[in-house]
Image 1: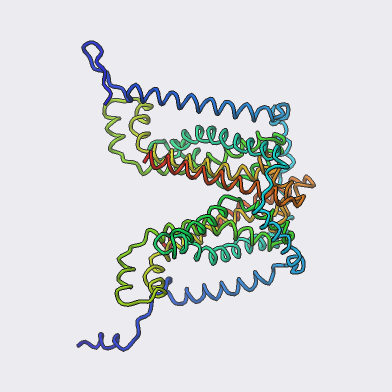
Image 2: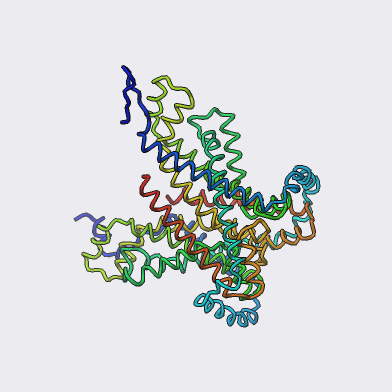
Length: 271
Length: 270
């Protein structure tokens, strides 16, 4: 406890002198880095447009309101596509994520030295790259369309699901597995009766959680041409049809809120 | 021997199903199958196009073996620096703004009107995706990293304030009460009673958010909001797979090292 004598009285301080110096140095470097970053951003900005921003945003607002409600009739198909992209993508991702997770978990992997690092690399690569980039890549390979969206969502979700799942597998209670093994179960039976029941709630929770995120992500996949409601958004933006843009944004917002509500309900029921 | 035991003995044991109610389980699985059939039936796939694309897919995978960092190195460098600058700037501003909003969104320290306003801000920020916010901000502020910077800051506020508020709500009241009882002002109460309790988690979450911000900054370029995304998009459009592979490898390496660093700092703080 840093206490200094000052004549008769004792003065309490929160940190010792070295600690304060260290804190000052950290704050100084942090501020310097931030100021440098701000300089870079400000150099690349046309400030005239920024000062003009209030007028522009008011202008966009007057153009975008009221939304073109009758356009809703054309959004049924794209919404259905969006839902399919998210759901099918999640299903494919889950099917692929389960084996990856078992290979990546320290207590179930066949080899810690070779297989586990490969599985972890798969997880990290899939997680680091956004689904929009995966979609760009797949569109270049297999052409624009819903299929590219489904695959992009699937590839992006593998890492997420596998990471959460393998953490759940690593946290299981070993004594249950031991008990199953002690009654003479084969490795496959140990898996289905010892490990799977312990991670099933986590598995269901992860699936629904990822499905909810995927609904959000699939709404914008169309921006790069991978199907769904984003295609309509992009088309409306290109012709500056702001009343349609505002309607599409509203529809996306409602879809996101509904999917979040469903996901919260299901997770509440499981856990 | 009771007859109850006898009736059980003859039967084989069966694993209990995940959903207990039979009708719910059956209708869920039937509905799911019907949905699957409908969904797969409505997807239009041009199999010929997919088949032709497989060669290109193979080329792309091969490109990972020989990524080309050299021929577009200046574009890659500018894009990466811009992405990193946006990440750092937006994380600093986002965290700075989300701390007061997080305090306001915690029911146990904020009065009801403040609580409602802050929760509203959090809800709006969380409901809008980054890319949509970026489109709107690019329309308002023009092309360039400023739009990306504002987008990421806005997204950080929703994420961090919500988690910070939840952490404050579940803190130990006794410590905060003790500070209050010694006659502290409101600021001292927050600084000595609340802050030390939530600081480790706040640091952990902030580092995690820096990580997310970098990943998001890689796509903002697609809509003109600055960063590496624009370079990546151009590389894909021109079928320069080796350059694209180089950029993707760089992104993966930076994300991995950020995760590693934040893991070390978190282990030290907690």
